[in-house]
Image 1 (tube, rainbow, N blue to C red):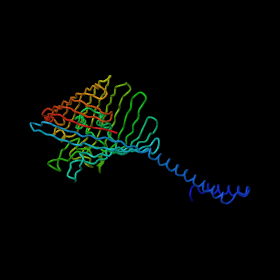
Image 2: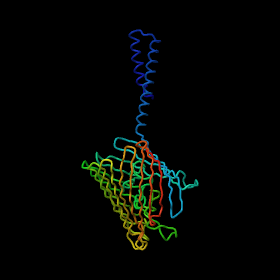
Image 3: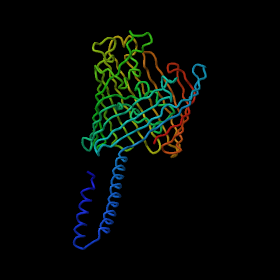
Image 4: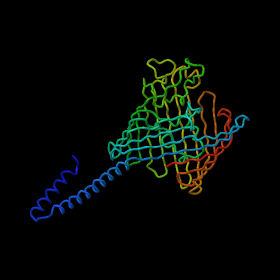
Length: 382
């Protein structure tokens, strides 16, 4: 039955009684019913539109993208490359005031494998966030690992340099997302912490192929794609932001078995320890980060990859609202007796707080690849 039928019947009965008492003509009664019916139709449409508007307001969109140009001299070889690094779309939905969905869909390098390209289509976030109370949350799904300075916030307007800091793409394999469950809590004092139970890394088995890269942390990301989870990883972070302009953080991750098999064959446990600081005074900001992996087992030691670490120090100056300059020194080692170093300096010009143009120059030593030259970039978020 139509929702307005009872109301319409009531109106008809009331008008019928009125007609009987006051000798209202049938024509007048029919006209009144038609007018009331029209008003009910308008009211029903208004209610429906309001419901649709409220549903639409629960959906949120956002995203970011970046286009990079690299002109480098690599051991005397001139290399020039233009690449739309990534196009990202955020989609969120509020089920209620305390339960919401966050998701991130990404296309890298514009063309994916199978279409004559080397790009990728990835789902980097897809989790339900629930507020347990006013200062604690639970996330379940695909989440970003709470380590480093840019793994969780990596839109191009938030960091200096055309390319992401090299330490946070090697030692910390940004963007590093995993399937798991994370509990977070923050306090009025400025202290917060996160605990994450998730899939672990799975490095390549050297016995399967001559081209395998055992103990390569970055290549070990499983990306929640039929991930092997014989041994889960545990990640913890504590952060302090109680002083204006200051951020201090320390994090750790433990993985019982890097080969993710029922029986350990070529890899054993791995432990990540790291931390960072950010200190901003007026228009000057200083950042520092250090992270270190310790891999257990004779095979990792024999390969010279039982210790993999690196760090960087960055100083930036926001000369004006639209212009910032920076210099960054990075040093890292992913293998014994290999000590890589890179120096970056350049500027970022903000034509809008959410649209930036970048230019920088990089210098590398031989262990880093000896790639010297300049980079240009454009980035945005919305």
